[in-house]
Image (cartoon, rainbow over all chains, first blue to last red; front, side, top):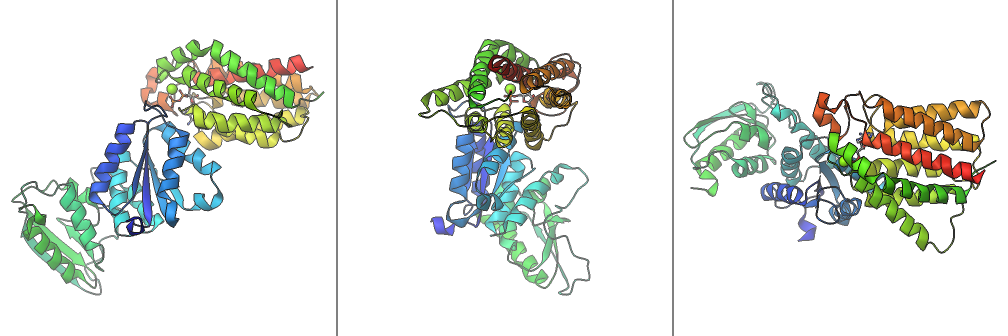
Length: 239
Length: 213
Ligand SMILES: Nc1ncnc2c1ncn2[C@@H]1O[C@H](COP(=O)(O)OP(=O)(O)O)[C@@H](O)[C@H]1O
Ligand SMILES: [Mg+2]
């Protein structure tokens, strides 16, 4: 099983053991092949950060040559993570980055990106872009490939489909879409937002019965649209 | 007049004692603008350092060896923000204190390194109501004393006075770094707990040096 983990793992450092474990489950559910290691609370299970727990989590995450992105909640979680890295050997430190990102949203975005076997820089960037998706005016994540101009070489494609599954476009189907689209050489949007961003898809708040307009640009634009339309019609296995 | 490993050991023991003595005061300061654990965090950390010192089979050779032990122990036992901050400070100071006898210039270098460590870790600058506000005037006073030819003990005495003034000056400040920054304007009117503990630690250093003279 270990060999199948994506090359970039996550370490979630929180003041609270429950918060770290809960966030790891939320992120892990959307990216089952990403190793997500929680490191929450102090040594006695109380609120705080533990140098030893963070160090152990980092060691587990970076075993077998993996890289890791670290997500943190409040101040001392950041400071402790950076201290562990300062004390670690240089080779390990080059494979680890501490993200400046919101804890839960950053973990989810990073996990989904890592699941597509993205590299360290891309996973870090997707975590850090998660903050931007709170901004009311932003309608596309700055990390994922920007929607190309309408005159992309492979041409454009477009399709409309009605959302069928009862729970709407919640976290699981949003993650499925991002993962399904990753191998396509195309920039895809759903109702104008970047379909490579779980958070942007979720923010659409699309519910059962809503019409989704799928647009795409790039060499595989029409394949990507066709696949997405058929997945939505199939109800993501939820109907 | 120089300071050796025995001075550093004495500094650590006096630090543990003063932190234990002021534990409740530090807890109360942190309760005003934080989560109330600073006194407990530091007390646990320095108690662990003393236990490690007691367990050493050979006395440490240089002040740097002692400070390195303090650094690694505080990092893994303090828990709150102060753990990595003081841990980094002592770690950087240990590199500057790696000779067996520290003169005035080496003491200044050690204090400067400690301040650099806190700043590197916490990214706070002076005026943000953190321990940086104690360390900055402490280093400035130490530099000035050394420039006037003061011996190491007087350099540390000057640093302790600088830290005391710096800690006092955090009272009216509004915190913009650390946990207290979440309080915004309500953080004004209270002394920063980390600045106060920095003062206590530098006073312990000066007392140990005065004793060594
Ligand atoms: N970014 C920072 N830079 C410098 N000092 C800081 C920073 N954040 C916190 N501190 C210091 O740490 C002290 C609080 O320490 P402590 O109570 O142990 O940590 P926590 O805030 O995690 O509970 C503050 O009073 C302040 O002096
Ligand atoms: Mg505190």
